Image (tube, rainbow, N blue to C red; front, side):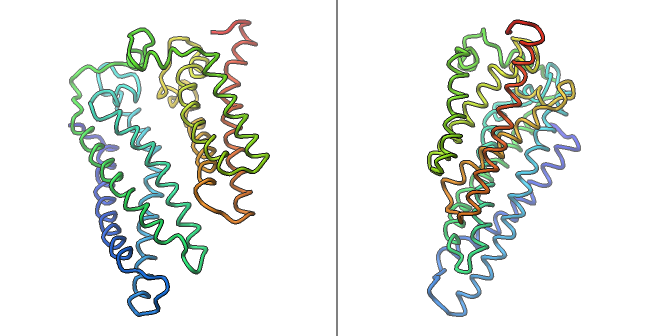
Length: 319
């Protein structure tokens, strides 16, 4: 069991989230089962009031969880100092069988929670609450993912043994051990970079022709390729070391915390790009989200592209 101030804080917040989320889940089911938009009975008015309360509770939980994702990553990096062998958060994630699944689930939930927040924002602008039932259905799905995340998070921290030696990031992200991770990191850089810049070009084209479905799909694919290329290629130029592929060390002071900036740019850009394809916004709002998405995605592409170019101009060779 691992008990640090950060872990205790996360555990206490998770208990509060579980309580309020379950409260919202109960009323969401009740509203979905009994709500009739065309009815004008006292029951319907009460359900509408309850739906507003439920939305406020869910919004509080999801806004907080999105912000706490950064705190969770910081916590992993911080407690790596007390685990033998760990050099960064990667060692903490790999210290138990739950860490990798938890991290993947947190990233998925990050997009789902943000989607619900965008959906709720649009619903609140409509007098008819046209997205009421949809957002409640999305929440019922998100509720189970939230509970699963809380459970995995508790299991991970409970399972960490501070006396056991864990693998360092150099071992976890090795390209020579024959594992699936090694094959992924060992991809041909020409193919990887070709896919990366081709997808970004498709995003720009979709923006120019204002095809929101293509724009959304390209952003979804770009998230995956961007993360793989960051770990496999661009990260090595940030470290200036061809064998260093860790996505967590980017968050450390030695590299000016550049990882936080990169991940925020990537999340904001791709989220607004994806959400355009799944929510019908008004023309001006859609135009604004197009611009926000392309702006942050472009910043991400320019920033990661800077490092290999700067290295080549400085040293005259590639890694």
